[in-house]
Image 1 (cartoon, rainbow, N blue to C red):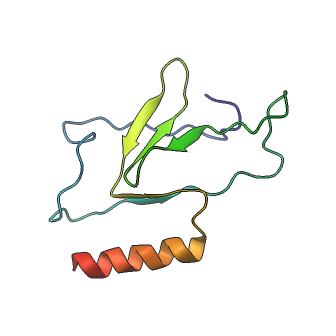
Image 2: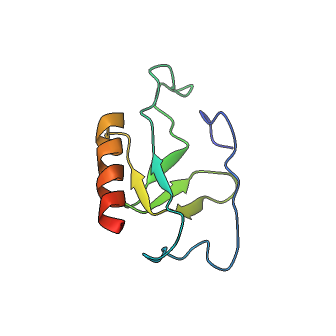
Image 3: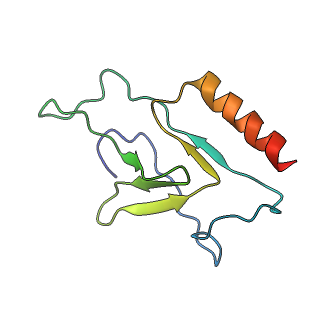
Length: 97
């Protein structure tokens, strides 16, 4: 587990886990990455993040020995406020329906 991570994410694997979802799927998964806490620094003073946003639908967990990539319907990065993330979520839901 990378430094700064408080808990492990489960890597759920099945035949569709790495495929983008279809518009007719019943469940949509939206992920918002919270900003790092002020005290989240490594021994050398650098900010150590356990994950990075790759795109609007993917993030990478920096785990040992190999990093893992997860795909969601939407990924909001650390610069997205909770209000902005919620507004985007409702817009997406309205668009889907």
